[in-house]
Image 1 (cartoon, rainbow, N blue to C red):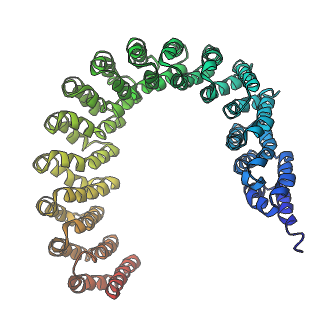
Image 2 (image 1 turned 90 degrees about the horizontal axis):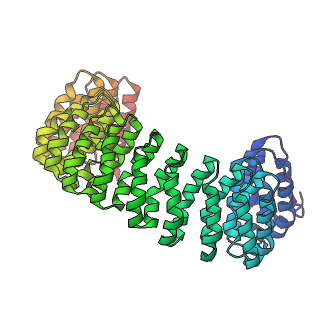
Image 3 (image 1 turned 120 degrees about the vertical axis):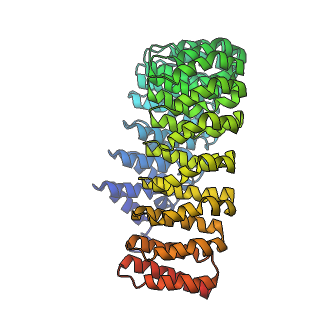
Length: 586
């Protein structure tokens, strides 16, 4: 092909592939649009490629989604921001398709382009596009329009601004619930760009329309706007306009609306200030905590700590704590689980006395819950309580329950306890640990579940790091090495794993005198899995011990293993020998 025709080649391939029956080829060509545009140059991209894409009526959503995404970053390929408007027509078409994710991506790309366009171009091209979409016959266009107002509005002349507010108001009252939903979703973004004078009049009247909508799916999205508008309004306006809506929504007949209120309530407290929170929002929150729908109670329970932080400790104890007690014995395990995941955070808020008197009994009842997730959520946050009530009280009240959980029938609960042990050990100190938890740590090495045995070996390493080699040689190493003779090979493998983790912490001397002889003995095991794990452990100890030990003890052992009948044992033994040679040469 001649050099003159070369620029035509990419566009020809693109057009062919875009019309190909194979969706993958069409997708590939769309994803290569930037390469094609670079090959064509800016002018031909504007005059040929973009019009072609505008006319391309591909029916596959995946291709359209890729096109919407690509066009969002296309400004450099059409000649910069002064030509950005040429990208609007294909995206306008994509804003009207039926598939939601394509429309959303097209709106996102339009917002990205619009935020970079010059003000004059926004007035000439972008605002007319928004108006066309908002007047679209098919609801999809009107849905997309709602997401573009916050880009179009700030740079519009006053005459256009009035018109845009009026159009948005009409969209809030559209016949189609989908359009009203989109208007409710984007109201907060649009309101943030509107002048304060119009915020109280136009925007608040739109907001009131949406809050009284007969569709619960629209009302629940209006709840999200409450928090956004609350941040824009002055506190007194917030109390006058937003607070009554929230109180009414907290008693809405639809549980989904009440669920949204439970999720958003603590943000609204910040917007309205302390006094209205105490008089209006606390009773609303208490109602939600006692809601007859479990999903609403779950959402409310999950926010209990955040809500308590906004209140004074006295208010929290007076109003919220009685509800927390009820929720701790709720009939729904998911409510109890949501409560357990946050309740520990209440301890710093309520202070030491209230925690000991009121919260500790709740913690204990949740630690004994029949549902493992509830117990897990309590265990993983124990340190928050420790900071408030001190380790002595914690160990007296909660430790018996922890020891019980260490033998829980659900392995995930046992795993959570193991992962918490090093933290507990550092808080309790050596003496306490030896009395109560030492035996448990050894017991886990022989658990039936591999993940528990693995975590137990890691746990021993972390304990050795915490308490030091002298303590470890007395309290960990002898008990671990005793278990190397366990009749079951899987348990022997766990011990080897534990030894390999302990060796770097214990240092060269203890490794050579105590750990290495046990590893060498294990190399005579009958089970190949043990033998090749010995080879791996020996390889990991090479950097720890002296060169003389490597030559006298480790190399002879590996040479024996390298002649083993089992192929895997030979492989790992040779790998370890190569590692020795490499170390010697370096």
